[in-house]
Image (cartoon, rainbow, N blue to C red; front, side, top):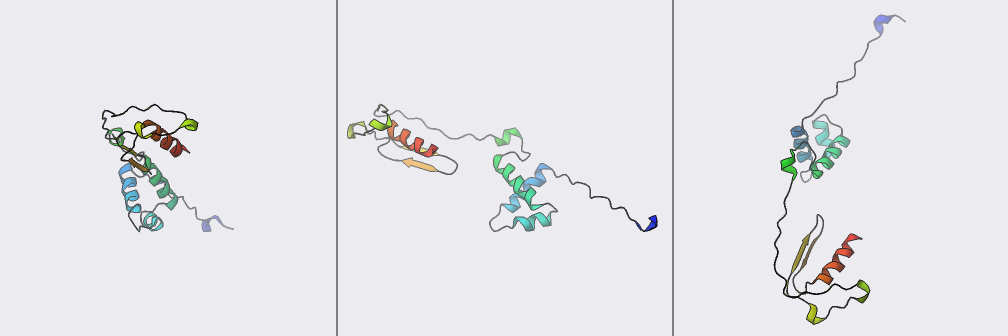
Length: 133
């Protein structure tokens, strides 16, 4: 075998993408009806990498500056009309006199909880303990 017939194939150089380019690809992939495999192919990226970038994007870690990743939540505080003592769960019994006329709104990433009437500390504790499970 003579050495002139052997060709050396160099591996392709790794392409580095900027944070802005990654975000642009992820935003395309997050459009309704978008195919991640198709978008990855069009941009010369492995589909698994696009999935990973989507995870980083959702966590706010895809090259954004720290000032853009902080989100403040609106909070309003009002004076309670009735103060109720929180009792252990085994002895929890809500009497009509212990019910306040206030409302409670709690927002989690996947759950929105609104209690319009009868919101008191004991009820809120029971609901939050249930959500932790």
